[in-house]
Length: 486
Image 1 (cartoon, helix red, strand yellow):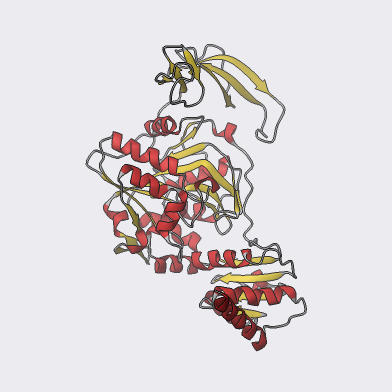
Image 2 (tube, rainbow, N blue to C red; image 1 turned 120 degrees about the vertical axis):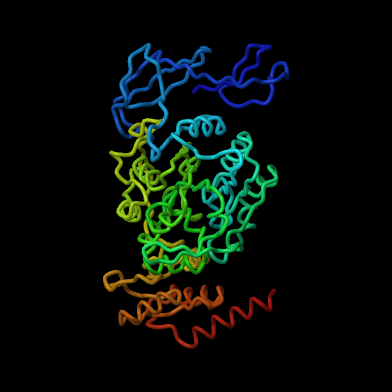
């Protein structure tokens, strides 16, 4: 597909969207070329930062209107060949589409390449974006509101009227405030579509392999279009189509899933849920210390679509040249999806031409350079809370601290770690069970300012052997002083 914006009166064309002709101020027509031929070929043998794998071909493509565009591929073509993209033959296929300037046309083309989208006029639809915490859309923490906008427009064009957008942020975050900040609430208001906080809905109990899930009723009563941000995740490798569905269960279930090893429980959740379509948002995407605002926008300009969330996540790891996370392997073992890249039908872009080294996330990194995490699969509240507390200490260099979080701490993980602090009730219990006494214990119910002051006192004193009663009193006095100032 080649798209141009055309003024027929002045016979002018633009590569990018324009609303009216800059010459005559007249209307613009979108011109979409479908019959495309190869009119030129260049083979590239020198690698570059954005194109590290060589050799590759750059094709010059031309449509029936004479519009041209370059296209990178590893496949071999001859001049005069038709450039065709065939529709998927299997239900578990993954469609990858590079976006030039028109997200709407890229989405429509991608949906048309799936074997089936399974959405009909009288369906009730739940669009499930990722809105884990308040962040602006350009930060790639949350689903791109433009993609949500185009999905709703597509559904309405299909005469589907019963649509809701629903999500649940990480525990202790305000879902509606987060949706407003990222722009998704504006999209819902534009289309007169309700936005639902899944944390405030009724839940239905469903079990799989002996584990009980409390699932938000709208996620069971409606057909779900899952719209995750494709990004790295410092706890589980990547956040994608599988991880985004964790927040359709209630907070207690999420905590139990993490306590029992989230990478084993996510695949069971996928088995417990009805089938759903995933539209992976890599319009920006994230790498580095995702999935929160510590990560870096990746500027991938892609979307991934599939009826198999495991296959979609597998393909994303291949594109980003990332290590395949354990949850993907576990999901394949329980029959939740396909993780064998050799057996996944990939439609649209040539995956070999897309491969690019994304920065993997380091699970030991916090927001502070001298505070290291020892992560025993901490639940989302503890993990996010620890990130925010450590961020408030940036600027105080101090001496290295090892912050233990989560339930699944092992002796090997903490062996040889000095200046060990247990953060959260789960870590406190886990270290006690291991017979390890940390330098300090910070309980979940402790006020945030007290947490900051306690960690500050440890950072600034390299000889500190334990947190004293005096330290605790000072942290409470500091909290009290702030209240007086306010």
